[in-house]
Every structure is written in structure tokens, then in C-alpha cells.
Length: 518
Image (tube, rainbow, N blue to C red; front, side, top):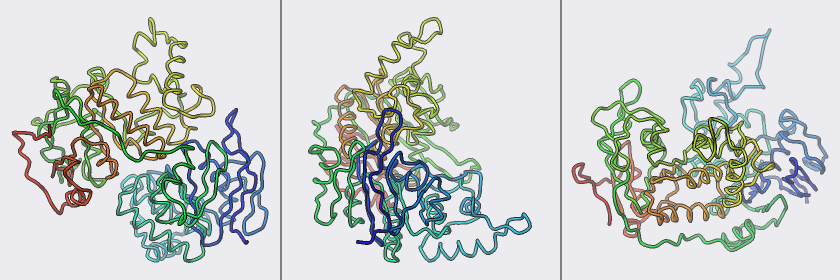
């Protein structure tokens, strides 16, 4: 058998953590090959070795049967290997074309020559249906468009081996469908595709074979067409996984969060981002906001949590009856708000702080963690290690690990541990399972339901319709900045919710009598 890629007996350690333990991995030419594993199983580390970001402690890499040494990404590019990372490697203040050309510029007498490269990039974007404005700045385009830039960056460098790390984690269903068409077109041309993912249904939809890693070891490589979703999940976590969330009927009590007449304009006041948004969340219920990304959900959560300021005088937000419209983020937290943010790296963690420092980042001034302004390190250590154990947070150096070095899923677990373990009345969770494996998703859903059963109010924003239908007690659908529908998940369907999400249908909701299901 001829393989495009062979990674033989690869071992990589970080301190005491064995990230890759004698792994052998092979991909055929023209194959779409998935790598599946829990958070921290070693998937991204293995691919980072192939792309030259890390060097293996031992093992051999062969490209088209020839042994190669890949010491850095430039070496990887020479062997026609490209990688789209889970967290994109783009310069926000550069234009699209400058990002694509970065490190591969065409110059003449010391000056950049962009005319010929621009034509080549435009041809690639048309050929693979990856249209994007080359002169836009990265900071001004959507996440889906940023991913297109990363793909074009690979193609411009003539990559034949394409690595996608969690490529659908930040995409809408429509963007995922478009991406899969592009990936299948690459494979049809003979390119070898490696996809790192947690999403079992996506593996079934696109991959021919799947390699499963668990705790740094190779567990199995299976033919996807002959392997069930349940079997893939079992191989990944080493036990049976429940895809159903067990929860009793909700018993809503007093109103905890109330949003009244929320309006928000864009910066130049030419467009309404939020239009007269009204809803309540009660103690003992999970309210999910569903909607295609970019319909005002992010701005809504930013206003409720205080990340953005509200300037409309007729708009009000109350928490346990107290008006919090214009109070600080710290005051909101002290009044009982916890927040799992959508962007874990920008708003959830201080990446160059240790895990223990992040665990107390919004409670460090509490008496149990300080006395007379001096931190109680033993108390902080004990608290952090308790959460590491309880939430199964995996890292190379435990409480001393810099959170930047942790996998995305374990970063998410750390935030969830911090926010659900502190005293609160309202838990706001934006995309709480983004980038998590099925075992971790199962745990997060159980945690959210347990929070509800402790009589907390839960507000969830999710792009995953299956998740919305599974964990919610009440569903609100947002479209173009408005609440266009409210549903009992037991009395609706994914198809009906989808119609409201796309703007095809809407119901008239009274702003005087805010509806809720009891």
C-alpha cells in the first residue's frame, strides 16, 4: 500500500505528560481521514508534529514513501503540507491578501508585487467557491470568511496534504455544508485530507477512515462506513456514552433575569443590531436562544454581562429585581451572575496565567483567597485541584500549567468549572460545548441540568440545534436582532425552529405580556 503520509511510532512528551505515546498513523492519497479523540487525547499535538510546530521525541515521518525531517512550518510547506488551525493564525489588522501572502511574498527590488499573486488567488477562490474580498481587513470579516482565508493560504502554497483542526467548530450549518463540498473536491483531485474533529455525525458524513486516539495512545483505525456513531463514541471515551440528556420537567419559579425593550444600533447608527428584545429567565429553567450566527446573539449576551455598554435609555436589564443596566461587570457577578463566554480565549481566560490563577480570576479578592491583600496560596491550590479532579481538566502540569498550552476543550472545562462552582443565581452559557468531545458534552449537559435543578436560572446561546432541543425547557429564536418565536421543545421540531431561524416564519410576541411556558 502506498501512503501519502506515514507517521510511525511517534512519541511526544511535555514535562510528565505523554501527549503522543508510540502512535502510528497512515493516510492514503485522495483520502479524507478523520482523527477522533477526547479533549487532550493528543490529536492536535500529532498534527502539530506533522506541520512542524512541534518536533517528536522519537518516531519517523514519511511523505510519499520518503523519510523527511520537519523542523518547522516552512519545512512542512516545502513538503506541500498545509494546516488550518482551530484558532486561526491570522493578523487582524492586515488585509486578506496580505495574510495569504505572508511569508510567501513576491518581491522585485525590495518591493512587493501583488498583481500576479492576486490573480492566482482570485482564480483559486473561484475554482473552489471560496469567494472573499481580498482587500478587506481580517478584523472586519466573519469567522467563516476567516476560515476561507486560511484555506486559500494553504492552496496558494500548493498544499497536497491538508490538515483541518476542528474546522466546523465556529461555522453555521450552511457554512459547514459549503466547507464539506470544498473538502470533497480537494479529495477528488487526489489531495490527502486530515480532519481533527469531535463531531461523530460529521465523520460519518465526510470521512472514509477514522483513527481514534485515547489518552495519547492509538486505539483503532476503522472504516467509517462500517462503524456506528455509538461505536465511535465508545472507542473515543472507553465507555458507553448517552446521547440523550436525562432531565425532569422544569419547575420555573421567580424571575431571575428580565430583559426589557433592548435596542442596539451599530457604531455609525445606520442599522439596528437588536430590536425591542424582551424576555425573562426564571429560577429552575433553561432558556436557549437559537439562531444562525450573526443575528444579534453575541451583542445580546455582551450587553447582559456588561462586556458592552447599553446606551438606549428605554432599555433595561434586571437581575433578581435589581437594575443592572449600567453597573460594572464585577457588580453583576457579585449580584449572582456567572458567564461562560463565547470566545474562551478572548474573554474567558488570561492565557499566560496559570490554571490556578485563572480559577480565581474573578474571586481572588474574596476572603477565602486573600487576607489583607495577600493571596492564600494553599487555599487557592486546594480549590484548583478540587476543580481539576471534579471536572477532569487535563494539562501537563496541573494547577501550574499556563492555560495557553492547554487544549481548547480543557480550556473550556476550566471556565465551566470556575463559573459553575462559585455562588450564583444566573448562569449564562454562550456556545458551552463548542470544541468539546462527546464525553465532555455529556458532562457539560448534565452540569447545566444540575444547575437548573439547584434552582438556578440558565440562559444558553447555541448554534447547535440538537443541543438546543435536548437541554432547553424553553426556546427563543433570534433573527436579525429580534425574538421571532418562542417554543416548548417538546411541542416543536428542528424543522420548524429552522424556518424561524432563516426568517421564513415569525410569531407576534407581545412586549407587554412576556410569554413563558410553565
